[in-house]
Length: 51
Image (cartoon, rainbow, N blue to C red; front, side, top):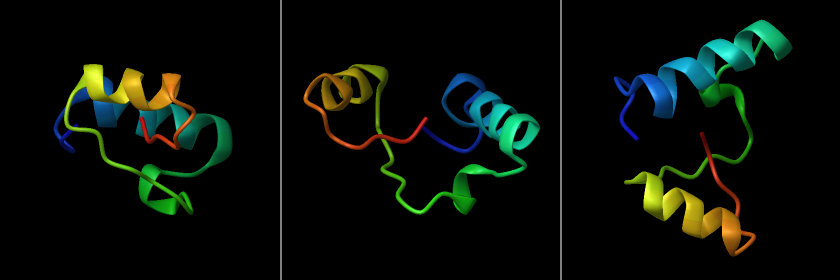
């Protein structure tokens, strides 16, 4: 998801900041997904995923 995507980047970043005082770039391992379908497929396969 792009950095302008509310559900794919902005809201998860706000949640991380509120709960853990971190942002997505602060995470050690981040994988960018190009679509929600791809993201769910990676999660179902047990692969690491970003928000």
